[in-house]
Length: 193
Image (cartoon, rainbow, N blue to C red; front, side, top):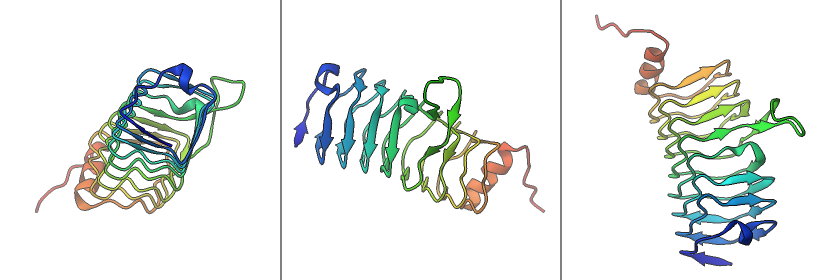
């Protein structure tokens, strides 16, 4: 199914399953995605800002040039999604244990792509991001809390103010500018001799 320039309401989305649907320039702003699933869907230049997730799933979806800002992914599942060139500012990527709103569980985001995405001021908490590409992404003031970033790619990324609280960073790929910005964020100073 193909939807163009449609403004969705919560009632239209509740309990719906979308499979191989294409959404072009659609608006979902401030809707409740309750018991809604999207499988192999493509969201092109859509606005999903301030949406509320409640047992919502995104499987093999892509979001080119879409806005996904001010979101809490605690009640959403994401599997192999492509956020390339999406605006994903001020979001929280975390999963909560069933029946407990205070305890977190691991959020598997492996095989997702965040290249060229604007993730400014977002938080990743207890996320498995092994091998994930953040190439050329805007990661300004992003917090990675207790995440596994082993073999992640951050080349060309803007990482000023980034924080890796208690995260695994083995073999993370950085270019020289990123390496210097990371060192500066830790209090190191590069001295020219």
